[in-house]
Each structure stands twice: as C-alpha cells, then as structure tokens.
Image (cartoon, rainbow, N blue to C red; front, side, top):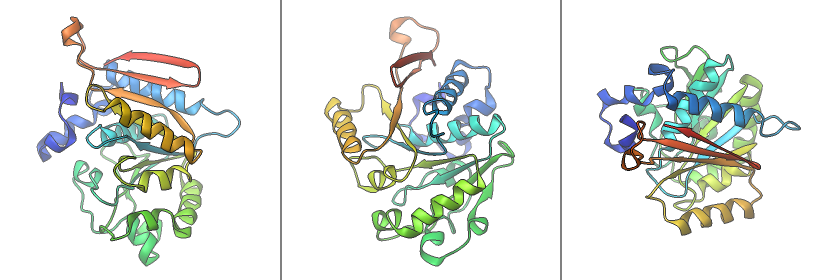
Length: 249
C-alpha cells in the first residue's frame, strides 16, 4: 500500500518503503519493474538504449519512484547504473537516499567538477548503483541542461556505466525535460491514473514528438483495483512498439 502515497507525503523514516524491488523482490510490483527493464533493453536492437529519461506531463506522478526502482532493477541484473537527478528545480532523490545535495550535477556543469567528485555509490541498495545529486539549484536550469557541457557529460557517463537514468521535471511545467529528451536514447512517461488530465497527456506526447524524442513507452500507475475486487491495489501498463503488457501491482 506504500505506493498509494505521493512522494511529497513520505517522511524520512518512510523513504525505505520506496525501495520496493529491494525490500520485496517477489512482489508483483517488483516483477513489473523487471518486465519494464526487459522491455527497455529490447526496445531497440539496432541501437541499444543506454541513456534514459523518466518524465511525466504533470508533477506528483511518481517519477522518482519509477526512476529509483528501475535503476535498482537494472543494477540487480549486474549492470552498472548511474541515476542522475536532473530536476534542477525541485530535486527529490537525494532526500530519498538520505544524502546531502551540496555537490552534484550543477557543479559539473558550472564549476567543471569531475564526475568522480560528485558521484556517490549506493552500496546499501546495490553495489552496481551510483547516484549523482542535482547539486545547488541554478537560476538557469534549461540553459545548463542544453549546454555543450551537458552533451560532453553525457558522453563521459556512457563511458563509465551501462545505463544512465535521468529523473527530470514534468514536460508541461518547464522546458527542462524537452531539452534533455533530445539528447538521450529514450524517454519513458509516467502517468498517474485518474490524476493526469487527458489533454495534458496528449500535449506531452505532441511536444515530445515535435522534437523527435524517442518515446519508448508509458508507465501508468496509481490504479486503485480495490474497487474491482482485486487482491493487489495497483498495476502498471507498459506499452512498447506494438506490444502492450499488463502487470498487476
């Protein structure tokens, strides 16, 4: 039932509930994340997906939850994964990991700090999982994410890991996610059932298609199945190419 809570409602002591694939690996939710991992890995055979952006149309969709559990699921499959908090306006992941945000992505982009100076290893979750916090909040997030320095950083990150996952702001709220979407191999949208307006979802798709972003699929969460008499209260839908998969949550 922890997934029913929005991220902003979690107290520090409750953050442990977010690491579902670590704490409850046999649950349907964990299996769904493994399915998502597999679909992403095989979504493009010609050009393997290495850099991935997780975003949504509106705030509070559960992007950070999906980003963290997807990164952890990939790390559990013996891939080196770097999770980057690219929400340069309202960063969340450092709070979930209970770490400081003194240095991070913005220090690399502005102060020319090296990746190794700001990257942390999340050994208590998985030795293959690494994390780069947002760092100090800048006055010009979109400009930083679209800079040549960011493009150089992407190349460096790909040399150091098998997968790089970016947790980003919502598409409609600011332009940051659209700027990053043009630079990564693929984009996954997170939609919260019953909360995201239909028009917002359509607009997000149109905006991403305009910049020729590679939309890999959609994660639909927060579906309350108790009204339908089901045992598990949530499930996710994943859609990749012509194949739709449904996993109970």
